Length: 167
Image (cartoon, rainbow, N blue to C red; front, side):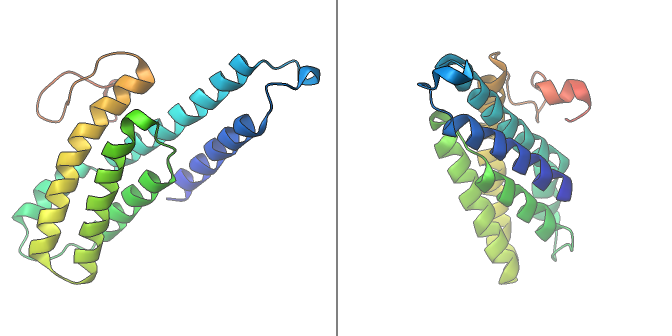
């Protein structure tokens, strides 16, 4: 969690720095186009960090294990909290914002159900979060990579992280 926080802080700092720079500052020698590219790279780094977090915390198996469970598992709350925090901390572009908001809302509902010790509500919320993640994940990889990636979690083609051992 600490590593993700440090990465997100660095990426957010880059994003803020890029946003704060003025395109009219002739002394800096940095064009508006260069600043836009830095901001795009910073946002893409945030998105990649979020997507990697979802894979590290294994959203797919979290849902599968939850649906089979007759009681709560001690590790679920930390996994949900990390995914929720990184989703809220990411500066999602307009074309991904609704999907990310839906994912975050369902994670929040799952966290609340865990806190209330309501296993049925938890299973419903984590199932919805899983479905929302299946929409968000390939769309986000498509945006940041500029290539077409399909949902890989049920046997489809690979996303960039799978080639690096993050499937």
